[in-house]
Amino acid sequence: MTTAKPSRAKELDQLLGDPWRPGAPLSHQAVLRADERAEMCAEGERLLDDFGLNAEFVPARYGGRLVRLDDLIDVMRAVFRRDPALGLGYGVSSFIAGVNVWAAGRTEQCQAIAGLLLAGNRVASAYHELAHGNDFARVELAATPSGPAGLRLTGRKEVITNAARAAALVVLARTDPAPGSRSLSQLIVDRAAAPPATLVELPRYASTGMRGVPLGGLEFHGCPVPRSAVLGAPGHGVEVALRSFQVTRTALPAMLAGVLDTGIRVAAGFAAARTLYGRTVGDLPAVRATLVDAFVDLLIADSMALVTARAIHAVPDRTSVAASATKFLVSRRLMDAMDRLSRLLGAQFYVRTGEHALFQKLLRDLAPAGFAHAARVACLMTMLPQLPLMARRDWRSGGQPPPAAVYQRGTPLPPLSFADLAVTTGGRDPLAAALAPAVDITAGADPDLHRLAVAFRAELAALTTDCAQLHPRDLGPEASPEALGLAARYATVLAATACLNVWCHEPDDRFLGDPAWVVAALHRLARSGRIAVAAGPRPLAARRAALYAELASRLAGHRTFDLADRPLPRGDS
Image 1 (spheres, one colour):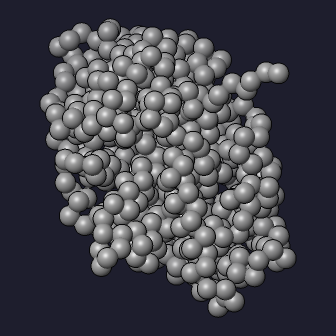
Image 2 (cartoon, rainbow, N blue to C red):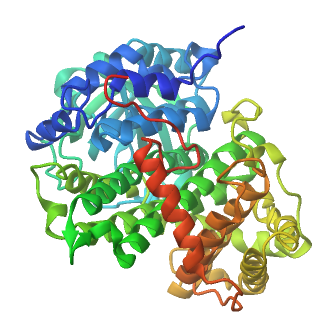
């Protein structure tokens, strides 16, 4: 008899230990001490070095361990559950930069970046300039010709994670003075090859959250780089970024779900330990409702992120809109849930010492990680131009749903193909096409679930009409708030569709196969999206009671609150 090899996420969890135990390899106390010093947690970085975390960001063809995006998300959640600053500062910054290289780099460029990462170095992306935010078309950093085979970089980039300690940078620069996105390219800058006087580090930017993450800037003073440093074809820098964003806009919010997982654990522990009116705070119906809502929001976020991550494998040329919708909705859902939990903790949520001190750090760290390399409104702006064509094609005709494997955790998937990522979907929307079949399945399953599913089918039909009629002026920077609202409504429908299909495709799972969680999820999405739903026969209170029992069971059993329901390290285990 052979023993199945544990997942890498489980291996990392065991290596990092039980963070609630003071003597654990990476305890909450160690994380908080580093935060108070505004430093990266040295203990955590040493452990991640031992694990070889950088290999998770390098595709297997270049010697790394990156095969499945959902596996990478699982691994990184183990880090984000303990310390979001460690997740961003040690790993995700290199991942964001690396994806651009894997998407557009020549073989020798990919091998060079892979070699740096596998040797334990960091790579950073330098896109943003404070004067222009997410408006890449106005980038000022210039790469001007210097001889037949060279370029010189002049300008500055700000708020770069690991600016001072990155071995290489992926830089977005203007390679043509003409206006427009086709004048921009991405280049790889080898820090070791840059003359010191041509690349000057700016002081770290002060921040409320992510205090330990090295957030600096760089000034380029005629920094020489070879023309061979350009990623892909010259002038395609924005296109490369938009293709890469499909991966990073999906993965980063999915990783951040680990923050809410720990936030729920801290809040539930606080409620169980405090007494009010002769009973524990956790016995109060309003407190239980707050905890359950956060639990359900985590399941919503995980469902949407999981489905999009797996769709990137199955239909990589049709996920650009879904990825932006995931970044928009999941990050907002996580932050709103943490904000509600902070009110449950009352004055304890901002206390920086004691048994609940971790919460204030999680809350502060989540906000900057939530917008990271793309603000939520930028995600809406990315989605909006594609909605009319999707409405006229797939939404109206029904479209072709993705393979069932997209919704089945742990089932095989095609390899992650960076080359097949596309900037637009061509009007195809397989994830929305999965709504109608799921609604049909609910008809004979649960009356509450069916009426909610029917409401979302009606909402997609309304969106089909509204988006097909969008005026061209509402598809660009001058878009009205009402037009952006259509993109937000679509994201809500896509989240509901993901939850429904996870339920449909997990009939044998003890928890996920039960309608209770998905009824609560669709109810919350309908309420936040202001979607009219017919009155149901069964009060939601009954569902809440079952969900609170599940939450309490996972809390007592040291299991995660996400879809995976994974055992966590406990004590000396």
